[in-house]
Image (cartoon, rainbow, N blue to C red):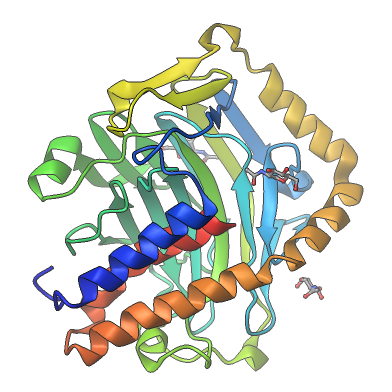
Length: 345
Ligand SMILES: *[C@@H]1O[C@H](CO)[C@@H](O)[C@H](O)[C@H]1NC(C)=O
Ligand SMILES: *[C@@H]1O[C@H](CO)[C@@H](O)[C@H](O)[C@H]1NC(C)=O
Ligand SMILES: *[C@@H]1O[C@H](CO)[C@@H](O)[C@H](O)[C@H]1NC(C)=O
């Protein structure tokens, strides 16, 4: 807030609100249909055995199954391959075993996002191979710039590492290879003027080119420079996703518009077992290549969704730039824009 001109605020709010009202239902504004819950307390998928179309949709771009894992590939302007879980979890742990993409201007991301825009992020810039960005949002609120923290992630582009979020009601921790590198308490978030992420979230993983030459200079500078597609293809590899869901059930319902954890009703919580997760894993292995070609076709059709996002991010950053603020401040806004994009997919 201290870095950004107040004239920017209406623009940001407009952007977020537009995304909510046109593409998804925000339970803090109106009654929405329930979120499908991960019915088991654990879910694990090893993507080296194939994509898991039972549990994940490819929502944009080129995601292919290889023996190294799911490959998210950018070959040209506009590519932004993304997958999204078909279920939500309500507190727990999510581990992403992945190798981030190299490439100037390329952004790799693995996030949790709720319908009311609570968000917990891992983000990696192609130009910063030894850094991971941790970030969060509560209710999409973006009037502070005190949420993003860089942590050490040596060799993030050379080999897979375990990037974990342990999300509890009272605190969230970010771990790299089992080492806690950041702890955010709910009290600290609130004291810092932010709302703490506390509503059911789904899981989204993808890459995009912030350095696309069609983007504004501000966006390109933020992303670390202009992307040269002749240096590609740029690839992120997802080896494995492990999930612990603290509140398995059939669905989650927002009991009111408060967006508070206490208002969330866990439906069908008596029906839990780990059957559905292991079934999902086996199914995907068995259905392997057939599932993949279908997914890739579906994904190609939604590329325009990501272009909308690029334009939006560009507007935000160039506006803040012309207002005289620094890129380093405006780039903290990225998470909101990303969440908005992903909400569209
Ligand atoms: C998708 O990525 C793979 C792996 O890099 C590549 O071989 C293939 O040509 C790409 N397909 C499209 C449609 O871009
Ligand atoms: C996943 O894809 C299917 C088929 O296109 C669609 O019906 C469903 O709504 C999608 N779910 C999510 C969470 O994107
Ligand atoms: C990833 O890290 C988490 C947190 O330390 C740990 O519980 C989990 O077992 C790890 N998973 C893998 C595959 O290393």
